[in-house]
Image (cartoon, rainbow, N blue to C red):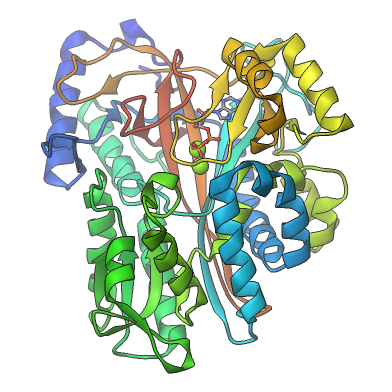
Length: 487
Ligand code: ADP
Ligand code: MG
Ligand code: MG
């Protein structure tokens, strides 16, 4: 069997059943599980085999990550630029507006003080684009199969700056895939190792050290009804294993509202424990803030001296609106250090268009309505399942044209298809079907004021969805954890 071209007839039904059972045992034995809505444990959805992926494109995605890290950080420190960029969105979208209010208060308090430490754990997501819109760029893959000789390239879907889910599982799945490959006599050395868990733990510990108080804790801010608990807990245990001196606590936004106190020097205490680092695994969705209390808790943490991962500024730079603004001519040049860096970033962009009220927005809307299938309409939301596609775009834009600036428009990437088999609990194993892998590259950046103390690429995550799904989402049952087989 050639892994690069898995076909139905290359793998027998018996082999599939054998690997499925082995894979499920592997997941359960390694804590690759989540809690479903009825509080039952399920193994994570996974692909039976890693996705074939051009090494050249993997390298290109890894190489641009430090540029993206720097870009997000630098933009977040430019209050006036951020304010102008988000003005129309803030006016149209109450959630962005609430976040911006906090950013505004932090800035006015002067919290970008010289000694302020920041930690960003980001992930930039890509699809392989088959339209070859920039065939001369050097990040192109020159295996010219199946698309008339036009080279493939990576195109950024979005950048996530808050609460990356699956960071632990993304490191365990490559190990599982290597094991499964060995069982069918294949070598797994083309499945790259993934340091994301180790790097995220190291980043959180480094931030804790920089804060400089041995008795202070790292606080995970979590949802009370979290599905993806074990992914978070494994990270927590990993931190403890690396540095036993660190204490990790888990609290919800409501807990922080009830039990926190800011003392002298803006030191934050929760249940009497000083907090060195706030690591948000909640706070990216309006549903995490059911009342003003949760917003108040967020503001308290942002105004405090502790390190926020991410700061509200980093979170805002991860909005879809900001992605669109950064793609405008001349903007990258303002923040990135040199031409090469600008070029590396720019060639990952696909068409991004404003829908702000005015001539440009009118023009973009008109073009979109002529060919809605070519676009994705994106609100300022995270976590999957929020985008709008096809005829629904027309309906939404025509129904409430005056509030259209809560969205941006993006070219719909025509992704490359692979074959794979998806394994989900309580669902009969799929046939070998057409799937779309989405590659995320993790990046970590630590700074003190203007000084960058660490900026690195730090591993990967692959989620694979079936071809008929428009939005991927692992825990929503639309995608599965995957890894790569480099070709
Ligand atoms: P979220 O922050 O909710 O994850 P994304 O921008 O990542 O939002 O969109 C969710 C999913 O929708 C992606 O994982 C991808 O499968 C699909 N998607 C998003 N943008 C595009 C695009 N421009 N072209 C094709 N598919 C897209
Ligand atoms: Mg996102
Ligand atoms: Mg996404």
